[in-house]
Structure formats: structure tokens, C-alpha cells
Length: 600
Image 1 (cartoon, rainbow, N blue to C red):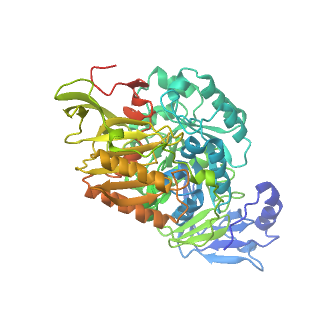
Image 2: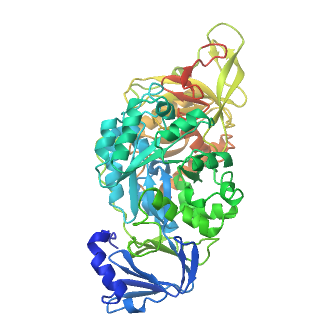
Image 3: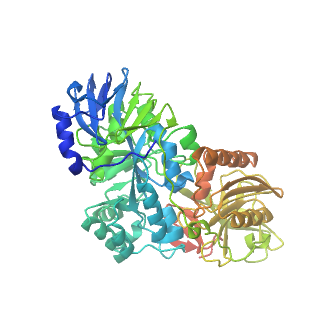
């Protein structure tokens, strides 16, 4: 089946009017169901829709006057007609998939619109990488709209990325056809301090009439928070508690509640609506980061909507938060997010508004999925060699590269430790007394080695520290070139020789994730495109990712979605401790600190 063609409202308005008036036949009429109107928050039994040129022409109680020769008529068989689901904030690269394969994975789950921020590839390949993602996105049968990444590096001076994004890059990208706004402004200290580049990027976006995405990860909702809001961020997805959601709504931001593979922030914030009674129009559901296993086994935005309903949200409100609220936020309420005349004919047939089985999915008026099966092609971009050769270590690594020399002669020493928090992005700043053997600091108990291996400029650099919370046993290592946001290589292990073996393996295959134990590779997920993505089908990638998860568990890991936690250990814009090529970063103070307690 061919990819549905998108015709502009202006170009097809004469035909839409003619179909709605009964002067011309529709391409498709759906009747025999119950329409969910997210504009008015009503359920309308018996309402029918007529579609022409990929858009809704007529939405009302009787579309029989729109049926003529050549009109396809679909019987909804008593099911609900709901708009196609929208993801308000997400990173395609987190699925380990290219835009084409991500679309192929989520279309059967009813996602027909995605607002994506490709800042992962921006850190590796710069503006060229963003353009590659943007171009493949526009080839898809559903709506994938791109936010131009704002922060590469995410925190200037605290990390070194493969490329840097400039205000000039942002200005250029605002003219591209699929750019919908500016990606999450993670450098909130820069905005608060009036950094000229950050403000210039936001100004360029505003001058283009587009939306500035927010990211305020600090718990401080005093003067810094108000200063950040004044900078123009229109939304924020970093809230983790009810008061966060309320604070953002009160400042005129859309509060984005996320349920990703590792982020469970809907239940703790949706009480702002269900209990405090805030206007739900200012709230949006999103995923942020979903890996391939979640997409294949659990779903995408359908999963988020079901979860919101299970948390006590009215089903119609939950649907609004995943459709019209999102479209309105990005200025596209006349294009997307509802079943109404002129809008793109993206809709779902489902037999339950609470269980939300995705039984039929239409995009631009064409049936694209049915009962979990994709019925349309998702075209691939021709990724060039420069996108497939991005892991440059500069040398073959050895166990000694992962050693932490003790600063002086003693038996034990107190060190700072990154503490992983299950199901949340923030870490804890912990400390531990570790033993010294042969002049080297050794992990003990819950504490493991962690290293960041520079992979963009072949410097051969390795930065070492300690992490706790994974529960790994002896003799193992896990390495990944997915290391938000700089996307160097993060290696966690309890054996330095295995850490070197894992890192060298990823250099051989061009990136991905690998886990080793006792001299053997237990699992490998190749991600040859930018060291972030695979162009293989989602199910294949998910199977390899599941093997990785099982190997992590066999090595003693007990965390939910531990790989996602692993991949965020270099994210130097979310408190409290992170690791970069510059050293151990205290994100509470935004400065590099000594690994050893009592030292600067």
C-alpha cells in the first residue's frame, strides 16, 4: 500500500465544501459508530464522518448525502471513533530506531502524530544529523514534526559533544518544512543567567512564530523558575510531583506528563486535574523516551492514555490530553488533534474508551493498521557512511584505562558516588568508603565502576568514577554508545578487563550496547546509525534489547528499565551527580567536582 499523500486544507477546500454540501462524493464514509468529540468533550452516538483528499469533510449525524459512486463505506460496528493520538514530546532515537521504523512500530498503536526532538543525533552529527532525521520523518505516512534541538552541548563547559548547535543553526532550521519549534531548552541555568546564545535561539524560534520547548529540571521553584518561565519556554516535561504540574500551569506553560520506558510521572502529577481541579486544557501527555521493547510489547501513546485513565482521569479528558491539547499547544488545532471538518483524517476505531484496544487506524483518510498489523509502507532514508561510522576511540582500550588511582597511601578512601533512582531521571549524590588495593580504588558491595569513554574525536580519553544502585555481581561490564546527551560511551562494570572488552567491541560494530561477563559477550544490540539507532524492524531490535535486559538481570541487576538509567548517567542537566568527559559533575551547582570527598 502506498504512503498516504497529504494535501493542504487550502488546496482541497473546494472539494471539502462540495462533499460536505452533497455536491460531490466522499472518498470514504465511516458510519455505525459513536464519535468522541474532543473539541466539546462529548460522546455522540450515531455520528458519521466523510473524508476527502485525506481530510475530514463532514462530521455529523448523517453522512449519507456524501456517499456516491466510488465512495468506500466502512461500518464501525458500534465502535468509538477517536482522533489519532499525538505524542507531545519524544526522542525517536530512544527507541533505538530510525524514524521509519519508529513509525512502523507505533502506527498500529494509534499514534498518528509525533513532536520529536532529535537532539541525540545533533550531539553526534550536528545540523546534518538533524536534517537526516527531519527528511526521513517527512517521508512517513503519519505526522512526524521536528523540533530543532536547542542544546548541544546540553551544558556548555561541562561536556564536549561531537558537534555544537548554534543560534545560526536554529535560525536556518526554522525555515525547513517539518520544523515545528525549538527542542527542549535544557540549559536552564544559561537562560536564567541571560546567556546570549540561548536567548538568541529562543528569539529566532519566536520570530518564526513557533513553539519553544522547555526543560526545567531543578526542584527550585523560586526566582530561578520564574526567570526561566520569562525566557519563553512554552511547556515542560520534567515535573515529577503534583506541585510541579501546578507551578508550570500557573506560569502559562503546558505541563507535559510523561510515561516512558523508565519515567513514571503521570500518576504523581495527574492529581492536579483529578483532585485539585485544574483546567485540563493546560496538560499534555507524552512519552519522552520509549525503547523498542516497550513499543513492541506495551504500546506507545495508547499505553499512556490507558495509564492516565487507570490513575483516575476521565477517559475523555485523557484523550484530550493526547490529541487536541497537544495540537493546540503547537498551533496546529486547525490541522490535527480532533475529528472535525478540514483536519487531517487521522482517527482510530476502538471498542472501549477505558481499555482502548486499537482496532483500526486511519491516517490521512487511509487505513494504515488493523488489529496490530501495519498495512502501509514506512519509507527509509538513504543514511550515508558518515552517519554509520561515528565511534572513534583513538586506541584499543585496556583494563588500566578504567583504573582509579588513589590520591595517597591508605587502606580506604571516601568517594562520591552516583546513586541511580529507579523509574526517575534524577540521580542521588551519595558517598561510600571504598578499599584501596595496589594503589587503586576498588568498588565494593553496591558500588560499581563507571566510565565515560570519548568517542567523537578519537582522543582516547576515559573519565572514571563510581555508581551504585544496579546491583551487579562480579566479573561483568555493560557498555553503550547511547549516553544522553553527549553520546560518548558509558561503561558500567565490576571488572576493568570486561569494561575494556565491552568498549572495544562497540568500536568494532559501530555502536550500540553490549554486556560482557567472565570474558564472554552475553548480548549485543548493534546501533550502527550514529551509534544510536538501527534501521532494522522494531521487533528485531526489541528481541536483541530484551536479550540485553535478561543478561543484565543475570549479572545481578534488579532495576526496572535499568538500561534507560544506564544511558542517562552522562546527562549533565539533571541533578544530582553525572559523569562527562570533563569529570564528575555536580548538577546542583553545575560544576565539575573531585571524585574524592573532602577535595575540591
